[in-house]
Length: 135
Ligand code: AMP
Ligand code: ZN
Image (cartoon, rainbow, N blue to C red):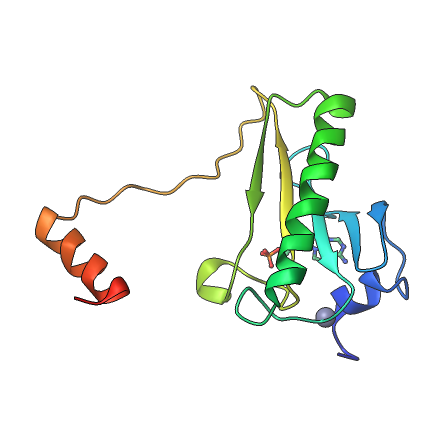
């Protein structure tokens, strides 16, 4: 994808603060970080989102995230960590090249990666279950 900024970053055409790289992935610091150390796992090949990325590449991204997260825990001393992955603008995706957020969390970071719980009835939950798995 010639006009995709994450393709250019992942393949080294645009400089980035790279904290990990292998033949298939580059992990960079997010330039609008939620917290200190917020990073993005970028596949070097272009896939728009979860629906396009092959299973084995997704598994590779998870493996890289675990390795980087473990390193962050040791080096940054974070108290927790969120993995976040947005698909589609309705879900908050702003760059349409698959990426996995690694967000180290600190007890006093004042960030919120939360949603407002709703209160569906038992029948509504069953109806949703049936829609997903079939009746
Ligand atoms: P999302 O909302 O899941 O699509 O996240 C996109 C993320 O990419 C945001 O957290 C941005 O701060 C980050 N971002 C966008 N452009 C760049 C860039 N050139 N370098 C580093 N991070 C970027
Ligand atoms: Zn791309």
